[in-house]
Image 1 (cartoon, rainbow, N blue to C red):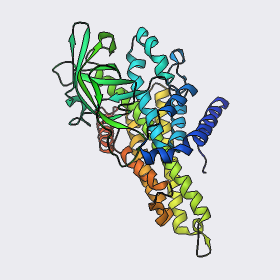
Image 2: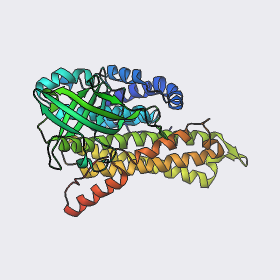
Image 3: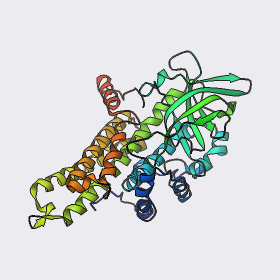
Length: 388
């Protein structure tokens, strides 16, 4: 296994050792079977929450870990290296908590955050719609006030944890203007809320993805997060951090594929020598290593900007773009290293390749990331469009 970055503090090193042990002992042995059977591992998220890993980047006073984002992303990488579905799920859960942490009242935080950050309640994020993915301001799901309740009506697409989550962070239109969108925290047991059958996906099959239907779902007025009309701003701010989470998971996935390819290349022999001794293959592995290190460095650079309170939207898009494109390339090359065996399900690299593809699509397609980066360069300000 090639070296991973560890920050030079004993506390951080101990945290990463714990995560590696959990990943090796509890996640890796289950991952292949769960992915093959499309089994959602709800108990894994409960375990991670009770271990303190679901709320790492959020304040300690509400049950979080209070760690810098730079450290949190290294945790996500460790998880993503052995089970990408779980790594994505941890990132999505953090995104689902973002609106409450940043816009919730103190009463709302005290009421809901401890169980959310402690893993007792698993979150989902509802922004995209069947006709409005990269352009969330075109959403049609609406929320209207009726006495002391909000009534939500519409359909949300591509909901990670849909049907298994305990709460849903929902963006819904509350006015006629394009950006008149608000943010709501909807409990899973709200009458009128239902999940469609899970999507039949190419990869990440251990992560359930569904459309969610809001058929006049009624929730109390205090389920609004922030002010009316602030929802799109909350969504886009959350996606900046969420993109870093996906970049970290993608880097972990690339590292896992590289580790598998390297181990195979050191054992497999052709023409009387280990295949890593053949220059053509050694160069492939060298590029895999160099590009994965680069993706990691870019991702952690963006995290350091966030930790310092500096603008990081452009850098988050760069990290998401570079890390997920790299994951696609590295996992494809890992299959090539294995030769014909890489195309079979006897080895994990074919699964890694299937899992990498969607990372170029969700949390904003990589074409959207290029638009964000390009617009930010044009104005010399962090880019400002959307989602996914």
